[in-house]
Structures are given as C-alpha cells and as structure tokens.
Image 1 (tube, one colour):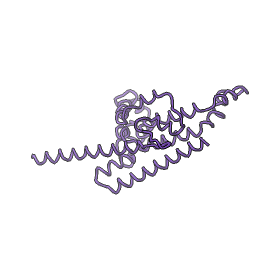
Image 2 (cartoon, one colour):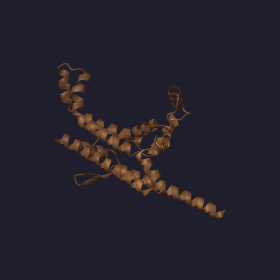
Image 3 (cartoon, helix red, strand yellow):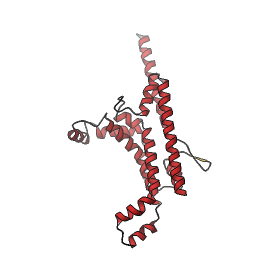
Image 4 (cartoon, helix red, strand yellow):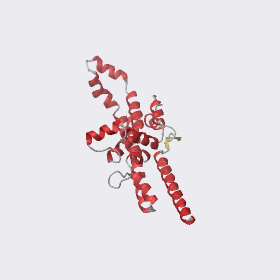
Amino acid sequence: MRNTDSQFRNECERHRLVRILVTGALVTSGCAVIQRGGHCARSCDSLEDVTFFISGKDPAGNGIYAAASPSPTVVGFLLLVILGRKSLFGQWIEAIFSAPVIFTWWAAVIASVVVAFPLVYQTMKSGFSGVDRDLEDAGRSIGADEWQVFRYISLPLAGRALMTAFILGFARALGEFGATLMIAGNIPGKTQTVPTAIYVAVDSGNQTMAWAWTISIIIISFIMLLMTRQQRDGKND
C-alpha cells in the first residue's frame, strides 16, 4: 500500500514537473529577445519594446498593458467564468447557438485573440500616431470627409504598421497555451493547438513528435520575425 502511494505521488510530481517545464519553455519561446542596434530589448518584460523595435518610437498609452499583465492562465480563468454555462453571457450564447462555446474551437480562437489583442492594439496605435497630421488636414481642406481621410490618407500611411500588427498578433496567438488550455481544453482534432500538442507529446514521452512540433513553431516564429523586420525596414526606406 505504501509503495502504491509512493508511486502515485512520484507520478503526480513527474506530471507536475513536465507541466512546469513545458509551460516555461512556451513562455520563453514566446518572449523572444529582440536585438536592436546592438542592444537587447526585453520583450518578456515589456511589450512596448516590440513596438519600439518596429517603429523606433516610445509608444504612449501604456495603460492597455496594465490590463494585459495577468498571465494567460489567469486570462483563461476569467474567460472561463465569463463564457461558462453558469454565467449570463454563457447562457445567452448557448441559447442562441444551442451549444456552449467552452471546449470548442471557437473557444481556442477567442483565447488567442484576447491574449494577442494588447500587442496588436499597441502596434496599430503606434502606426496611426505616426501619420502626418498635416496630410490629414490637407485632405480635409479640399473637402474630404473623415471617412475619406481615413480611407485614402491615414490607412495607406499606416499600412505597414497594420501588417506588422497582424503578423505579431498571429505569432503570439500561435504560441498561446495557458488561456487556450483553460477554456478550450486539449481535444485532438478539435481544440488541440501546437503548444498543447507539444505538451501532450512531452507528457507521453513522445520526444520525436515534441521536437517536430517545436521545430515547426520555431521556424514559423522566425519567419514572422523576418517579415516584421522587412515591414519596419520598408517603412524606414
């Protein structure tokens, strides 16, 4: 009996250690160190560094990051409370679609979008703040309304920043783990994402599959970073 309890505790500790290691690896890979001008910007410590890397400016409006400071697991728990079957909003969604949103692929999409939103928002804001106001005023002076000014002046000038925002948002959403696992679970063929697939592969001892998924996500992230740098260099040109 004691041996059984000891084996059970050892197995629990092993699973706990695996979860800690995998989560740490995912967080570390998502918080890549970005080098700019020979100095390393700590993207884990501050998302503003990513925007600074893109635009070369110190972004304003850091209040959005105060709301994004909780870990993805905390965000996932809050989403679980908001979208769960016991909440009014969750019951409203279930009444409309005749099915709950929790533990569906929609839940994985919602978790990824919510976690990636602050990065996308700040990058887009930085792009629009860099638009020359004199050009917008010139458009208004010749009779253009606000929609025309936005469509033909502001949007094209901020186009590179918008593309960069979507690229960074996609890369951030691709590596999302905590919030996705909380509200979407890990259902193979339905809600399983690349990070959760890595977690399952490591937990089951399938090192080959774990390495395959890890290398693939590193390659995709590297491509996203190159595309981001090209967008920034094109803007400087």
